[in-house]
Length: 165
Image (cartoon, rainbow, N blue to C red; front, side, top):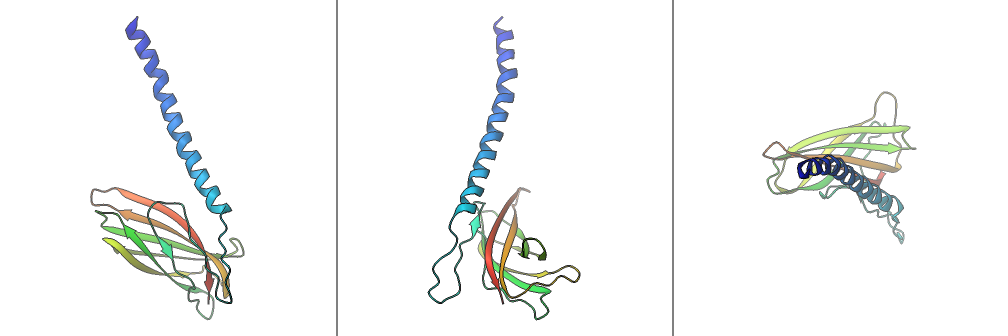
């Protein structure tokens, strides 16, 4: 009887535990996104370019610089930023997307390098086809992949309001 009760308890406990872990992860991610979306990103500029804080959704500190140089024809953006790899990180890859007017105009780029501790990176983001970006406000989003020595990979996303010039 005890064995049946134990088996029955395990059959119920395992799926309930998995469900609880998934719900906690989902709720935590949604709370982080909501907090980032609702945070006041603007700073009084006192005649200077606006300063905007990155909305990090990850625990690894990566950022994108602003302003970003835009080519004269609007088809290329030189994107730069900084990051930090945790102890044991061997290399990283950053994918960047620059958007304006929602998703109507976009440029994408990628860079990869080795890292140990703090690092800086740069990538060229190009627009597809005849799309062109304009000087002014844009959103820059990044996805960092940090490849560890044992084959593990950390992935994180973040976005920041930037100025193209």
